[in-house]
Image (cartoon, rainbow over all chains, first blue to last red; front, side, top):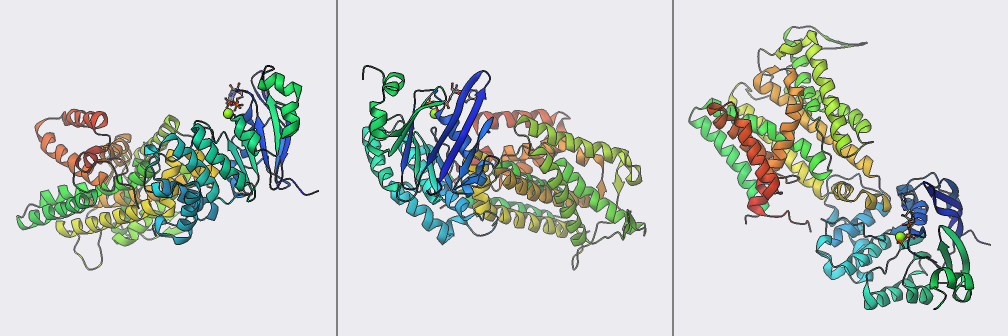
Length: 249
Length: 327
Ligand SMILES: Nc1ncnc2c1ncn2[C@@H]1O[C@H](COP(=O)(O)OP(=O)(O)OP(=O)(O)O)[C@@H](O)[C@H]1O
Ligand SMILES: [Mg+2]
């Protein structure tokens, strides 16, 4: 069996008396979309923060392609090929769309210690940044400041910056949040094709998107994985229907 | 609205014109004032890299300004007394050569910025302000008690240091030296702001999490900015001491650090010529109002308050609007 691209082993994290992550073990394999669902406050973002290095687990481990990265910081994990998008956009607000994408390309190239030539005139970085913007349909807005973008466009830019990293795995925290029906559908189509390039660990509330995209689903409730498996199993799992989808639905 | 680029060129040209006019009108004191403004602008331009682009509110930049001043004072003192400077196992001859003094000032203050930055950048926000302030005060009290070099009274140099091919005692020539250095540093700042490093540093100020997620280390970016910043302010300190042929612990005072921040806020934070506008306005107020009243700082405070409340882009922002995005 091949090594999972991304793996968590028994991740546990407490905030005071509350267990926000309770012995979470899951993995992400090449070519798949693995969705994580769960009610508000279930610990989805907390889990992602531990995977990406913003938060240290109390116990457990994170592996990227078999390598233990539990002690590495966010930047080191990004360099190992983890690209994250945030639930609440974390972009450089005063910079333009292109500058934000260029930052991703700069990080991916790993050569920020250049003090003289204008970064926007660097043909390699620029090609990489513009290609990513083009894929999410933001190229026409490249000169716009992020602070002047609509909410939906910021979500697109989050994805574009992740694309510039050409990562080994994507970790996306509610990329559809606040996109509206039209936007969600477009992004769903896009992510569908993206899994070929790199697998996606997808936290999402939009059930239509999850059922349309996921190869596997894990259900998180009170920090604990109560069910994990192929879409059909989860859809028909009584515990899940009770705890999350609501018994009536 | 005037384009910022044109405004900058106009400003620098105007400053040069004032000095040249003063030379023709035989007003050496005005040249000295202009030189003072240029040197303060240079010191603030150094701070502007850390504070403007990197968002590092350092209340300890007087440490670098003073270090530059003392490097010049100590080297010149040993040159004029014909005694070597004993540094542990090393024995260094003093010097009256400006380029050598500048090099030493840049190295010493850059090194100090590296050490102070390494320790201070573990914190942020108010703690960063306080810890840089504390380092500044350490240097201040050290200078006061350093009796070998004048202690509280400071250290006087008999003759201004020399620059090959120029007579630095002629006010306009010394002005010219300072002016050229200021222009070079501003050019460096302009390049830096658009460079890959500038992009990353600017992002590290606004969204450090984003910088981490693309695999870069915001703290390291800020540290490099802090070192560059300290080195430039140190160079300004050496020139400042040379202007008055005098160096004293007041160069290390926290008021000095505060003044540098004030200059930047007056002119416009992160604006290329913000420090120049700030320094010119500051020196003018100091000279014009300072002659009328001892309380001229009150008026400075009022202006500062108005700017913070109503013109966040400083005086440059008032004239040329929001900073344009690079393309
Ligand atoms: N830094 C923190 N300190 C204390 N409690 C926290 C912290 N971060 C998260 N929590 C708590 O941990 C629980 C899980 O939060 P988390 O943000 O991971 O949930 P989530 O599943 O992402 O929710 P949502 O669907 O609303 O995004 C919540 O009860 C939250 O209040
Ligand atoms: Mg969340």
